[in-house]
Image (cartoon, rainbow, N blue to C red):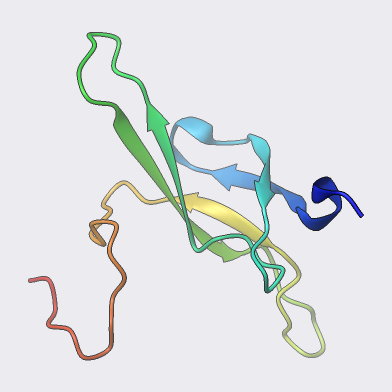
Length: 95
């Protein structure tokens, strides 16, 4: 068994923002799902700090009978309020 056998990816569509309509292979986690957020650094042409595009994982669709999730897609989130930190249930709201 090689290292490439352990790493799985899934072609995931992106909606909204600059990546609208593109499909990229996204690495899956140990549960078989892509990450909840996908951050794409975009270099600044003037040489400044890169801008970061943030996409959130949303269900692609649901099955008719049981309502199970049939896959994932990423939706553009221009107002990233998470700050890159996890939200804990006992934390105060951000504002």
